[in-house]
Image (cartoon, rainbow, N blue to C red; front, side, top):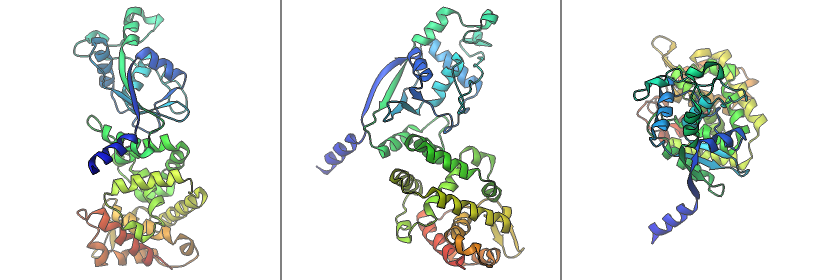
Length: 367
């Protein structure tokens, strides 16, 4: 009976509807702002021109396009949960796609494809270049083609929407954990998303973390900013509840955003003061490994060093700002502390590392 009860409860948490819609209808919804593809929260230009051309080819050939998932907001607008690249490609080809500043993007010009090589240089509708424009019959064929839509209704639980997004994020070019979280943040509270993104672009923060281009592309800077926000003052007992780190961050993020209890002014002050202080004292060495034999910090960014130093200083930032403690010396000594080094390697689970590392950092950097 327990299994059936779990099934019944979980099924009730998410309500969906589904039906096919013509591309012409979807274009109309987009132009009237009744469907939101949120160009700011996913890798908007992930698809190259060949991938985009192949999608248009598939539509012309009658090859089914994968189902698009949207979440219905309280105001009735649809948020795209899965299918951004497909819809943005279609909207760009037709010439109606806008960027996050509401500016029209240049219409898509296609490349040749395997079965339709004559698609090369084709545009949607260019009166001054009829040879490279689709004709009326071709435009109507595309507009009348249908895509299956699955709608997550507004009555659904927010966490269930998040879970669904994660499960859909498979194959192709999957989003990183933080990109998935960004998507849900925009759906739950776009103001919070923009605030967090602005934090991650703070100059002192970026100078300290020195992430690779790949990490920045996958929004790891926002992941770190979110971790700073969630873990900075979290009680130790709560930290001991960490199991899977991504699930823990997901749940805590939704709880913080939904509760509306965050003090934006105080958290931003803590963030900016912490990383300005780190820049002035450590600079690009902030989150590198210290080697006592050379008396130098070396290597790339380490998450364990971020948790130790950034969150240790962040926890005590008010007292540190008015003190004269030598934070660089403290950090060097911590790198010779076996209690830290034995639990900071790549093979150590976050559930074991984080409570230990944060506790050490908070105590060590207390003036």
